Image 1 (spheres, rainbow, N blue to C red):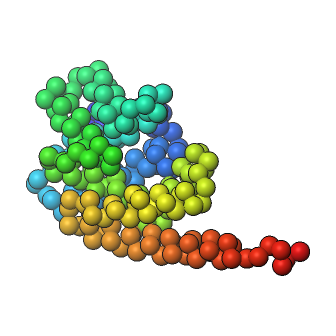
Image 2: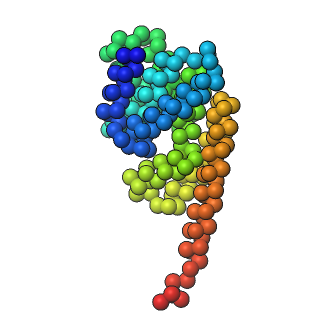
Length: 203
């Protein structure tokens, strides 16, 4: 569809190759969303879902992202883009709701199946081995220490499986959670080992 192709091209240009939150993340979320949607045949507006997925994080790449929740900014930008492309106003409102309800920190309960799917797909990409990689890519940019990153896993990432709305995503989230928990255990053990080493006896 021409509309989706146009939006995708725009998103690629704006969001770039950032594996944590850029187009590679969007592409993974898109595939996860379509996989989840395949279990809800006849219930999902595919166009609405794809547009929302493509634009869900676009607000992260604006100066305002440091001041306002990225999902709110993304919804505003999505509105402007879709208006320019002649998308129906009623559907623009739905896209904005879907985008805003994917945010972890806004804690908005998704109203539609499309919103539930985007929320689940986005959170799945924060779990498992990919989720671990994304945390450390982002931590490097924030100059976050290993211990601070460890706290991020404990305070946020391990909670994500409980926030899934679809059964198929919940099952995959639990599989990916095990990877996260094993990693946390190993990182904690290695940090504790280093802490116990008496430097005075090594000189």
